[in-house]
Length: 208
Ligand SMILES: [Zn+2]
Ligand SMILES: [Zn+2]
Image 1 (tube, rainbow, N blue to C red):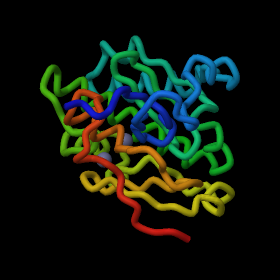
Image 2: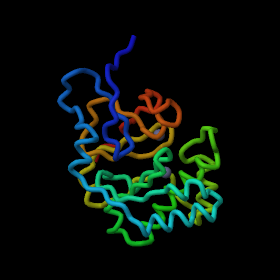
Image 3: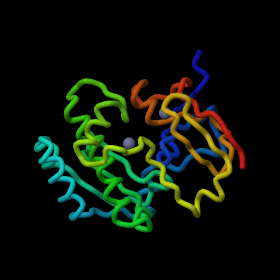
Image 4: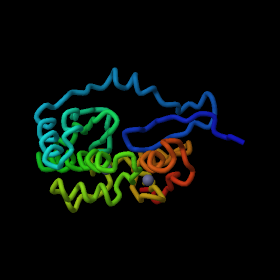
């Protein structure tokens, strides 16, 4: 029996996959399209050039040609995101408050995802597995942590509920208690084709 009627890619900015259990849920998310209409995005040609060069020097010429880097205000708590199919790296504009070093580190973290994917070909790999770790070393960020979430101090104050993915151990601070079943998007993508999977359902670990 299928209990969950609808899957929804809500809260994408925090890597959470949210599931609507019924019709008429008051918490139903606004469609991604309408968000995009509200929040601006813009391309960054300088960072794009840097990304292109890093990919080229690491033997990924084919994706170096296609790479795009953009600032996307839709990202909230996560610092960046890499989409291999679009060859697109999105960065959180709030990174600018953290200085050039943090921007560079995040850019390399995301490039490492693309590089690892490129090298793996059709073989499936874990988002922050050994292939990604190797790519990080090649890109000069050997000690990179796997979580994308930045410690944005303004936001952290109001995010009282701390959830954790039982699989990758990534933390998801939230303002409100989750009323719907929420799962780690990255793990659902890696192990269940992007569909909700109860194995990766987030667990509430603390309330402040
Ligand atoms: Zn990552
Ligand atoms: Zn996870």
